[in-house]
Length: 145
Image 1 (cartoon, one colour):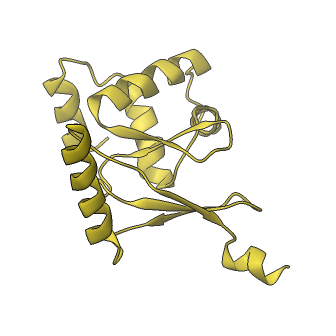
Image 2 (image 1 turned 60 degrees about the vertical axis):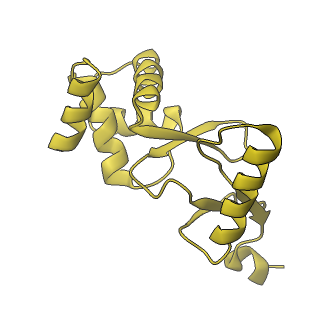
């Protein structure tokens, strides 16, 4: 595990246990959104002796520490991603094949930032972050229509 993540554990007075390190390494290697079950399967494939309950507990801890971020794609599962990505990025979700595409900074960022400021002002609400999901068909599924 990279030293910067170990430093995050130290700052929260938490140990960088083998289980926690293994989970972070899975996200580092896969570089994609993963459910708890997918993390567990990756760990099993690597011959790591970690139970599913331990995976869930550590995902929750990593979430609270800011190492991971939870994303919801409307498929009934919680998914996680590394938090080092741009804080405000969006997701394109194919409603047919369920592919998820990360969108970095796009031309509409000024719109979203303006909307965030308007909502904060109107409702006296401090917006810490936001997630935007766009649903439709990916190029592959469009071609198969």
